[in-house]
Length: 134
Image (tube, rainbow, N blue to C red; front, side):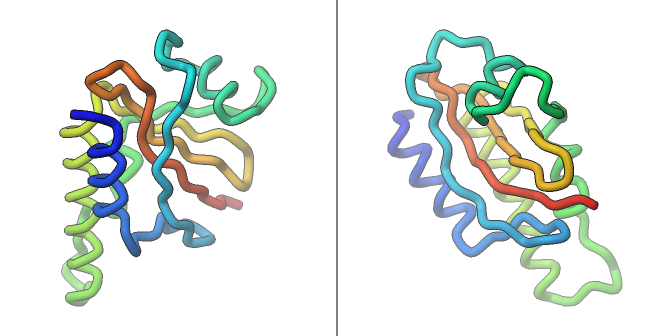
């Protein structure tokens, strides 16, 4: 699957979907140009984020990151159920399109979130968004 198809499918899955935190932020497609042979680790992610090596960094599994968005609550209405379904679809789509998907959070209160994996061609791609946690 080529990069354009991956971009198109991820944009479709995130259209109108917001990352919920103390501020709601949209998802954007992300492609790390010229990083094909780089390991996808803390050092590389901090370079991608243009942050110094000692900047706050956290890595986590995709399922853990989306855990509050992919579980419906009995007291929630239809709108919440649709939102839960969209996040479940997004999580599934990320695993289908990318290999070794992980979530990288960079920052302290306002955090850059990079949801990255490898394309079949070895490129680093995924989504980026922001979360605010005070």
